[in-house]
Length: 166
Image (cartoon, rainbow, N blue to C red):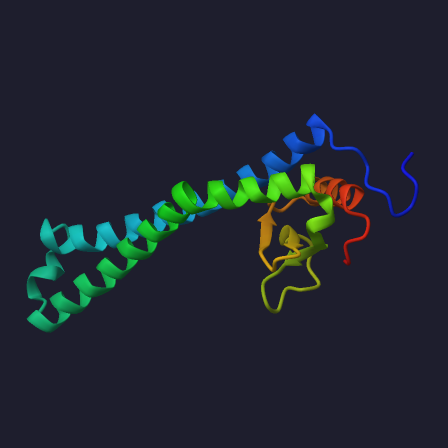
């Protein structure tokens, strides 16, 4: 038992739990990024390969507008994949290091559930754990529709950083 105000020891199980939470967030970003790119490429393919006969009747303005929208989707999807593959690994390593090795840097940790407007009273939603460090960097770990993993991740980070506000 850890006395009040003192950090619980870092554990391999806790680190694995934290990495599992990060993995779920990365999976969400990857799926949305790929889906966004696919929508843009699909719109381009409709016209370029005449997959929809109605695209033959498009004027120049409609064609340009369709390609601009499609390019926007491709760029946004590519940026999401860039963030996933290049930026997030460094950022997530900082989070794991802070929680595992320097919990005094954790300034705030709290749970939240993201729900659709108008359905706030219904069960479900996306369960998240939000962590903020003393330098102002923050993470929102989106952990899916079941609250159990979010509860476990939140409890572990709180045990490592009992001083953090909620």
